Length: 311
Image 1 (cartoon, helix red, strand yellow):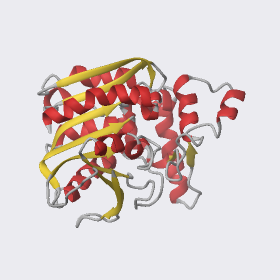
Image 2: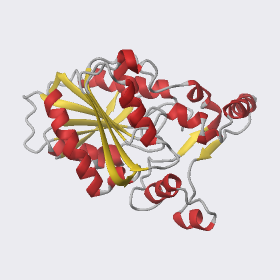
Image 3: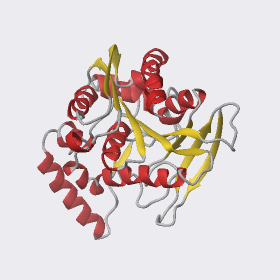
């Protein structure tokens, strides 16, 4: 596998998107390859699971993979920083595809997408309208709008929206930006303060230790600019618009972020899909599917035949 760093700047973009292009061993630039756009989780970056785990596995299997940083995050452009805007996240996928189709070694008729956690919700939502995507895989996919309306707002979405409105006004009047840290600072802090719910604790173990820690994976969010997330639904109109082959991979060890229910919901709604598949992995959790070799291997055993069939 070979890796190249690029900055994507299409003619309609106000800022560049930072990306890694992963190519297989023996890569021949004169040939056209099936290509996967790989989308990172909420609070993550391209150097983490989207490239180093799933991107690597797909490149080793013969695919060109483009893993990129979301706008306002990682090494991509856009200000203010740390904005999590679902509509922009979905638009980023199309802009990366706009770039991919200009590359001579990308087969424009064999483009797929894969996303982890929030990235899984984004690739599913993208595929509803982005029909250049011919097959889509969500790994432990999370519908971020649902999560914000529920656990992330402490089941008080109106209260959260009112607080965001007040904070945005304060910032417009010259106040400091409120950038919220999404996780405990360390595993030890989480233990000492009883923050041991499965997903919260395992996220801390991934993002706040050498296991998965990366400079670009900030696990931060600009609070005042998150309003639109609460009215967004990754799966809206999936019953009508999800026509491509789709696969949702979920772990049966359930946590508070809700990927298990979200993956099953998207699968259930995708009855217009040409081939819908739900992969449930017993005794594995949301964050196990980020980088644990055994469940990742089990997932890839299902993903690779699925992609080979449809790309």
